[in-house]
Structure formats: C-alpha cells, structure tokens
Length: 433
Image (cartoon, rainbow, N blue to C red; front, side):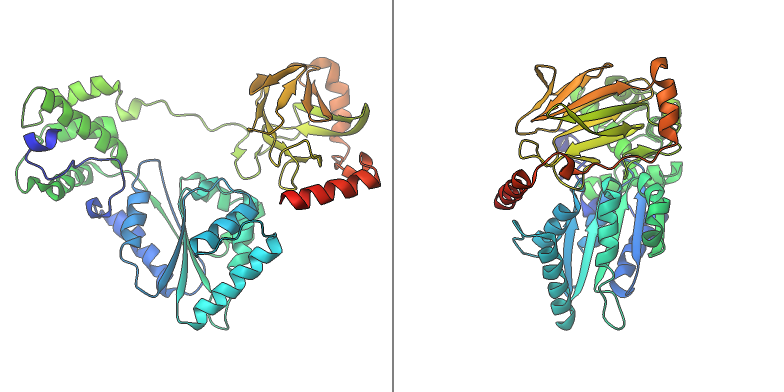
C-alpha cells in the first residue's frame, strides 16, 4: 500500500466514516453544535441535511463519540421500514427483542421504557441517518412517539440526518405537524476552494504527514475543479492520485498525477456533471406519488374468481401491492406476501417488479422478477388477477375523463371473502405473526 511510500501511519482518504478525520469547517462545526443541542434542548427535532458525500455520517460519528455518559443512544441507519418495523428497530437499539409483538404492545414497551429511564435521570437520544428514506407513515409514528413527555420536557430527543429530499419531505403538507416540531435545521453544502485544501491537508496531517508537503500547490485547483468541494469525491480523487504516484514510485503528487487519476476515474469537471432536471410533476418519495399528477396513466382491474372486485389507479410513481395495511393496494390473501410486488409508473410505461415474494409474481403463465407491462397483461398474484389497462391510449380517453369525476373506489376484502374463509384466514395470519 502507498502508506509506506509516503511515510504515513494509515490511508488518509478512506471512504469509511472516521470521527478522528473530521474536518471542522465552519458549517460542519455549526451542524455539530446543532446536534449537541439535542442533549440540553428538551423539545423538538434537529434536522441536518446535505448532498451525497457531504460528510453527514462522519459528522454523526464524531458527535456520537462525545456523548455524555447519561445518554442512552438508539441509532438507526436502515430506514426503509414499515411503522411496525421501525418501532421494533427502535426497541432493539434499546436492548429489547420485540419480535412477534403487536403494534400496541410495542408502543406500550417504548412508553414504559422511556418513563423508566427518565425517572433514572437518563436522556434518550434517537439518531436516524438516511432519514430521507423514511415513509411519511413512519415519520408520523415518530412524531407521535415524541409526544410522550413529562411535565417539563420530551422523553425522546431526535436527530434526523439525510439528503436534501428530507427537507422537501418535511415541508410537505401531510407532515406539517412534524415540521412544526423541528427546532433547528441545517444544510451542509460543499466545501469552498480554501476549505477543500484545508480538508486535504488536515486528513494528511492526521494520517502522519505532519508538515510535509505531499500534494504540490497547483494540484489543489485541479482537485477542486473535479470534486466540486464534495468531501467524498475529494477523498476518491486524492486516494486515486496517491495510488498513481505509488505505481510510479513518486513521493509527491503533481498535477500530472491528479490528471492521470481523473482519467482513471473517467471524470469530467464537477460543473459539467450531468444534473437531472427537476421532474415534472415533482416526485414525493414518502407517498410514492408525483405531485400534480391529477389523473392516473394506467389502472389495475382486480379480479377474484372471475369477479371484478375493484379498480386501482396507477398515477406516476410507485405503488406497492401486498397483504398488509401499509401497502398502496392491500389484498388479504394467504397466498400473497406482506409486500408482494410493486408497480413503477412513468410517463411512458409501467413496470411490475416482484419484491421477493414467497409464491411469486406471474404475467400470464411466466414467473417474472421485472416486466414491462402492456395493455391487457394479466398479473397473477395467488388466486387474484390484476388486469393492466393503459389509460394513455386513446381508446380509454373518455373513460379516463369519467374517472376524474368519481371518487377512487376503496378495496373491501369482504366483497371477495365469505365469512368462513375470512375467519380461517385471520387465524392463519395470527399464527404466522
């Protein structure tokens, strides 16, 4: 490895978050102070957002490394969870094994634990990274949890960190009550040109370079031009440049070596990187929908035993189908998994994707993992058929206009299940859970 060549104690530009390498720019120091304020502020959320690679996770690790002894930490990094899974994950962090518990039991366990720890003089802190992936249902569950309080203060302190989509999500109308509880909010932007140089020199010094100059002065301009001051990109480029120097047995990084690293990575200047135009209409991740999508582009006719049960509109975005109530389309059947499949709708097509279901997703007679749907395709989920209707075609224009004037029909499982079958299904599902 190049550490021997450069007389370093460890690689200075690893991508793994390491608190000791944290470069405390003014904005990083301020964001960390906001996080620390959760320990002495007794109410509200702290939200820190930043672009991919801006140093959020390293900042969190640095903050957590300095927590007082009376703080009990729950840290959640896997955020694509249902409300029940979120409550279970939180209890696991607090040392419980809450599996096979109903939601009401999970909530009772959390409330009792929070009150017990408050009485013992402990502070409960929940830190969620990648919080932009939390569904609006989970965020609402979190809001309700933080409503548990003593006479003077909240019993659970919360730090949410995520990409800029988190701020957009919190500003959505359906999360207004949660947004009002955000006490402090900070956005981490890219480093300035001066900060980017200080960042590189700081990491080299921590790795054992001392005052030795490893990167020539003219290299910093090139590095900034291709990294844009984004810490992760800076790490990747500097590490690659040092590997290029190692291959040539050179102990100083020149502009030529940085350019060689750029060519190796096949990068273009940061300013020329492709930026995605904001989609129109704007996608709202927590609902799996697009704003301003006033009418569906397709629909599913849900059929059970050759009887049409309901129709389900497919607007732009993602629609999840499964047995449990947190799906967009719920079909209660023992042959259907909790989260069985999803339909991804774009302006030009719809795709069905199996979500690792037990019994599989079939289009016609063929089991599929991923399939672009065509007009009239029949999706088989257990005993149910979902007939795909593409409302983009002209033959459905009149029908689509009529649909706009009607309320969406709600799926009622009682329409398809007789009493005996329903009782039997309930018993089976309870045993499974």
